[in-house]
Length: 59
Image 1 (cartoon, rainbow, N blue to C red):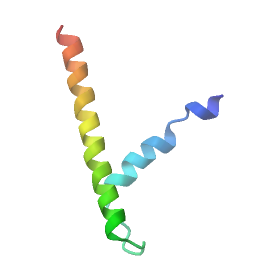
Image 2: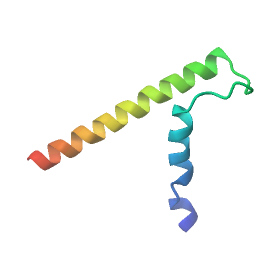
Image 3: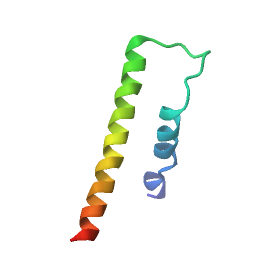
Image 4: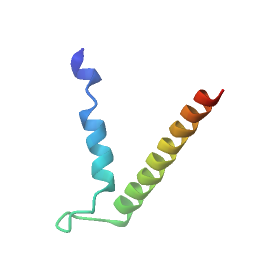
């Protein structure tokens, strides 16, 4: 059960998405667009969580 609640891989993905791409790795237009959309989604999610926390504390 402990294995299912480990979040190390999730946080590693967040770090990996915002790193510079490896020049030796194969890239394609679709892969770049997917990572771009993931970056936008992560930033929007973090922004919304911050807004929700602020609203919870100010009420």
